Each structure stands twice: as structure tokens, then as C-alpha cells.
Length: 400
Image 1: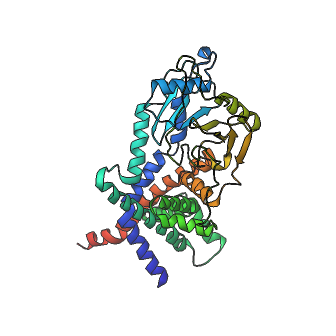
Image 2: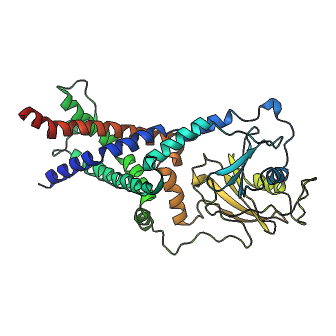
Image 3: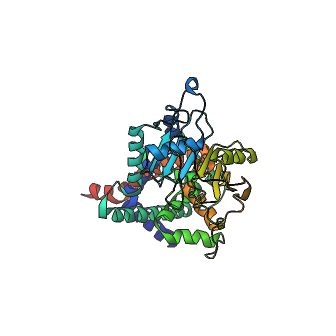
């Protein structure tokens, strides 16, 4: 009786939310390698080796940015460990500009058409690209459908369990057959096989998606992993700029960065006693024995006594492959190094969950697994609709 009740709830949930799940799954497939595709597009605009001469200093680039883009309140400077890559100034989540490190001229960093495509896919994945007041309703639809999908996966795992456990039965439910007596048998078998092979990674993808929609989902994770409410992010040294949060390529706190007073002719800061940004960054590189990929430098206020640099040797989405150094601007001394192990638990969870949803936290192979289970979900929705049609609609048509 209990198994039968679970089956009918499973079927009803699938019928009601299947189309939304199908939409989220297909957009998830299309977004699988977004990071790599964007990187490939950006590299096509990098400075060729033949044009790479003497680089401008970071202080000179800061000055160029201040003169050419005085209204851009950039709070982060991003350096890539590639001689042809631009130096990027970020202002918030979307604003920013990239400069040629050799000439100071503005550089393109990708394809507008590609950016538009992935932007559209992302917004459609989250709220069907609906704008205005109705976006909140669309987010609720995707949020509820996502929870229903979680129930479908968990209940499907229960329904998959054979009544009699033996190798022959398990093999029949785990392996594709060479032929099937009819399309109904094929759809039934495929529905179960795609479901059981993707169940565990799908639970991770679906639940992390729920964290974006419901605060209780995040709080549940904090409780499960023992991250207490009283736990706070490690305090920054006095007068330091905002804290860079692992798990994101932008600052978690939006601050207005001031470049201080500078001489527009010489391009030098007038603030006495502070080392140049280049000197401090070289200190960080010397102290970092990793093959770093990018440096995220928090641009300090003119009277700040500290410079914060996040060293990333991952793909930009792997918070466990990043640590943050705080340096004294006058002496160059390293005041503090915050590694992954020293990061507060709640901050770790936030940084991990964000990119567990896309698989990026485990790099290319993690993305591949996330993309594959999204593809499997398409087959599950299709075969589920086919089975529901044969069970609910086809008998009525035959009877009529």
C-alpha cells in the first residue's frame, strides 16, 4: 500500500512539473561548458606574442583606468598568469573594464553574441527570462519544480529497489538491453536505468539549486555540517578594504574604491611611504609556491594601510584552491594568510555549494558529470511522460 501511494504521488508530481524540469535540464546541458567556452572566446582577443613589449606597471594601469574611466568605481583588479591576458578592473557583479597591459588601451574580452546567448540561457534556466514583477512568480515556479524533482529522484530510487535482491535482478535494472519487446518496455527500462545511474549526482545538483531559492535549504546544510550562526568571517585588519569571499570572482561586499591623489603626468601616487602595487604583488608571487592562475587584488582606499590579494590556482570556481593574503602597504610584510582550512565553515559551505550546482567545483570532470545528469534528466522526463500517457490517456482513447 505504501509503495503504491509513493508511485502515484511520484507520477502526479512528474506530470505536473515535468515540463519545467525538462526546461531546466536542457538549459543546464547548454550551460555545461560555459566557463571553458567563454575562456576560449576571451583568449582569441589576447595580446599576440609579437606585440608583447614592456608591460605597464600596475600603478600606471590604475592611473589609466582613473583617467579614462573616472565614473567606474572599480574595487577589484584581476591579473591572469598569461602574458597576453588583459588586466581587468571589476566594479560590482557586472561592471568593469579590461585594459591592455602593454598599452593601457581597452581590450575586448569575449564575444557579445556568446555573452548574450549564455545570459539568456541562464535567465531562462532560473526564471524563464521573465522580467519585472512576474519574475518572483517565475522563480517560485522553478523553485517548487526543483523541490518536486528532488522528490521524484528520491522516490524513484525507492521504487527502483527490487522486491527480491539477487545479481540477476540487479543486473537487469542496471544494464541496457540489446532489444525490447515493445516501446513501452523500452521506456520503462530506460526511465529506471537513467534514473538510478544519475540519482546521487542529481540529488547534489537539485539540492544546491534549492539553496538559491530557499534560505531554509542553506540553513539545513549549515546545521548538518555543524556551521553555527555565531560563526563569523575572520575579521579584516583595521583600515583594510572589503573582504574577498571564496567561491566568487567578485567581492562579496561592494565598496567604493578611491585611488587617492595622483600626478596625471607621472602617473605616480602622492601618498608617501607606501610601496607600489607591483612591489606588493611581486611579494605575494614570491611567497606563493603554487602555479597560480589569477590574482584578485582589492583596490585600497588612499589611506588604507593594507592590501589584500587573493591567489587563485584553480578555475575560478574552486574556493579550496584559493588563499588570501593581507600585506602592509608601507613595509610589504605579510600580516595574514587565510587558507581554505582556516575559512569559517559557513563561508566554506557558501563557496562550495555555489559551484557544486554546476560541477565546476571539481573542474572539467565535475562539469561533465553535471551536464550528463542533466542530459539523463531529459530522457527521464521524456520516458516518464510516455509511460504516463500509456497509463492515463491511452486507455481512455482505446475505450472511447
